Figure 1 (tube, rainbow, N blue to C red):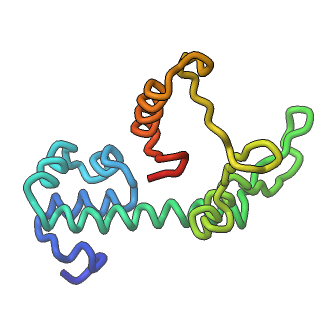
Figure 2 (figure 1 turned 180 degrees about the vertical axis):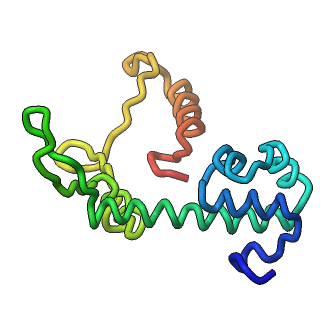
Length: 165
């Protein structure tokens, strides 16, 4: 089809093409609808009825996400220039970086290294112990009753003799 991205070449319908191109830029259905002049419901109808549209929409969505990622990287690494005020007057500029965005990017790229982990352990770093209160007086319970309660606990916890099954 000459001009335009190759991912869009599969779609011939003028309104579908306009909507998809607008979505790749705007990143939202409302933004694409406003930019292309195509009703939002048409988009949802095409998603329901047109397999090829669904495929090309996925490509448009990926492009939109790439744009978000590029913006996040810029804000995290290059920073954004912001005015500095003193006494109500602008006296200069400063570059502001986003540590939060940087952490999200690192978490996404190397989760094994940067993802937040929470480990729990018992006393002295040992294994955690689970205490279940059954209301049974162990001093007066019979062995048969104790066996029945143990079976119930094993079923509830998925364990046998304290080991996971």
